[in-house]
Length: 255
Image (cartoon, rainbow, N blue to C red):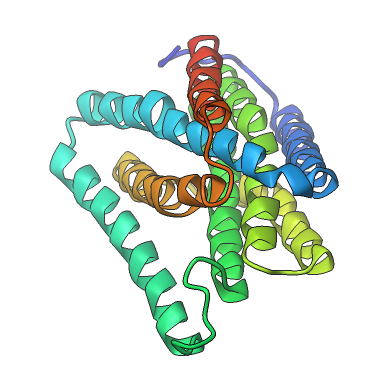
């Protein structure tokens, strides 16, 4: 699809971006509300979500990094450095919050409201960049922009689930969790709108993809997956993680 250039009037392009952004808002919101309604079964949702995160990194982000590096003749090392930084920065942020807020006698090292807030904010930042990705796709061509939007909409449902899951499992209230869900749902709309005012070089996109891959790997492997198995370890949960990975694999074969 690279290199495709379809004529599209400026007002039509803006309307298309707005409509697709609204779709991402609805998808994220529905995912979060699903998690709220079935919060007593969050360990099942989290097991599935962990597989989704792994699938997004392996079948969506990494291939995109490889494609961008090859097409623009960029350094693959810079993307991997960004990945390590994404992993380590969130690790340091999480542990620093725990060290600051917790006392050894009464702190559950696996659950703390501030960790949920930090995770939800990071996911909102990702959702904002998802919206930016839609807008940047349209800077290449309408066809690519629509394909990127389909990819974003398809996994924003899980983004909404992840936001609620991370907030609730870290002892935040339903009301506070829904506020951050709304923030996460609005973020891609704002991100897409922002691209109407600037253009980004491909080097930045590769660094962003690497950084975000590191973040996803950390919260998937260090937070979500262990929490899913903390009290309900079973083959069913393992199967849901595999199913989440396969779900993203299938989605990425058609977009």
